[in-house]
Image (cartoon, rainbow, N blue to C red; front, side, top):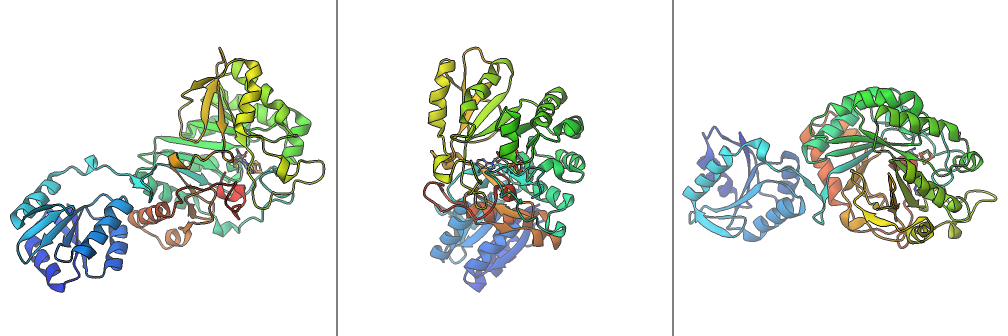
Length: 449
Ligand code: SAM
Ligand code: SF4
């Protein structure tokens, strides 16, 4: 059954249209409203297939059409109808008679729901189809660039989304075009029953890829079970190949455990494997060649990430580079890699992201660069983030978010959750730069990297 919503600032109009459609078993009238703001809010929640507007009140109808179709990226067709002279307009341009309106609605009714294209657009026309989900704010490491030595104060357990709440959010997202889910944290593998959560999420229809970003320290114990539960692949964060440095940068990590994790992930088929190195001038930048060499003999995708300033992790303590001397840009890294041979541009492995890829001659794997600081990749950004405590964050570099925890606790329907996701999409900024904009007040471990 197709769902219709009626909007007119004139009270008689709604009644006339309702009378016109009454008794039609293929149509359901979801609501009728005369206040523009209320109509826009209700349409966000109800998501009708067709909105019938009063073309007598052209300005209000046009504002509704602009909001719901263009700005919201919603799918309904807007049909304008002028009852007085039996004319209607479709999408503000075509004029016709009531008979034509009825024919139009017959066509809509005969459409197969599954053919309906569903997607989520932000306010700038970008399609959002990638959700990063922070499943915990806890971590077993204290990387200097991510957290203060004492860690980030943990949220109380009841503030963190339950597995079923995460699953509901992902079901809602899948229904409006999100196709890739990446689990992150904190450290996702410290979440209790992470394998059960992965199994639950992998069963959600519409999700093409379920992946994880991990520090790898616990991966050797989990890799097989995660693969069995439906996880497709992992990204492993690793910033040094030297045990002493690894410990200094993570404050408490053991490099060997990460190597075991990498081997276990490969053996379990959690591939193609990506290794993310945050490059820091005068700390680990002399290892970029060694990291790049890993791609010669392994089918790994080594990605160099420009270090970002993160609230709560600005001062790294004695004998560490200070904030003004840490950044090594992707261009500088690429320059240094020339000594290994000519780097050729490459499509890169599957997966969505801001990295651009290159390959060394005869290398099995590729080299990626994520220049979060030196270049904008906002134009192609397809991401949204869900924090462990249930905030949808449309931009890593912005404090703005939409609280979903209370809606979930109140038993919100999938449609209502989808409306919150679309709402978050609408506040996604067009572009942010850490060089020009103030640092986000949230720790990286909270927002999910
Ligand atoms: N604990 C997991 C891990 O380390 O892979 C997942 C969460 S972590 C916040 C996600 C990613 O954010 C990691 O690859 C980490 O290196 C990166 N990250 C954290 N702080 C960063 C910073 N200040 N600059 C650049 N990348 C950062
Ligand atoms: Fe933990 Fe990952 Fe942050 Fe390191 S980068 S402290 S492993 S959340």
